[in-house]
Amino acid sequence: MKLTVEISKYPLADDYIGPIKGFIDELNKTDDVKIITNTLSTQVFGDYDTVMDALQRCIKWSFERYGKVVFVCKFLHGDLSPED
Image 1 (tube, rainbow, N blue to C red):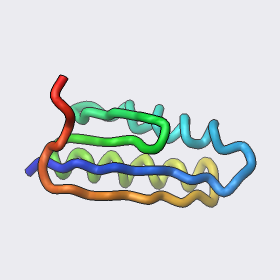
Image 2: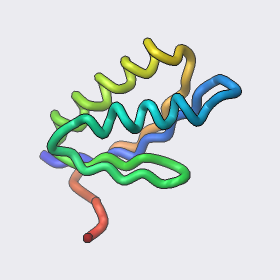
Image 3: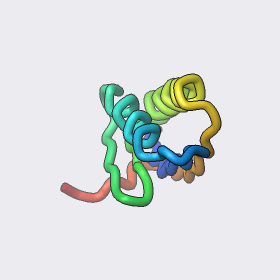
Image 4: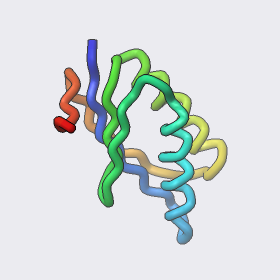
């Protein structure tokens, strides 16, 4: 089954750019997912289990590294990535 996730990260700190970029960099280490980043959110597309495993790993990494952050996510069934 394919999955699309739109995720936004809101660090509860004055220096918010580094934690956001760190999360995106960590997420980009995942093979077999398509990631599109824009100024408002990051979109992740791929196999359900692969996407969920990546998000679980990266969110945990982010909490451990940066402390208090808020994640806002939308989960949609299917691969809704834009055509290249």
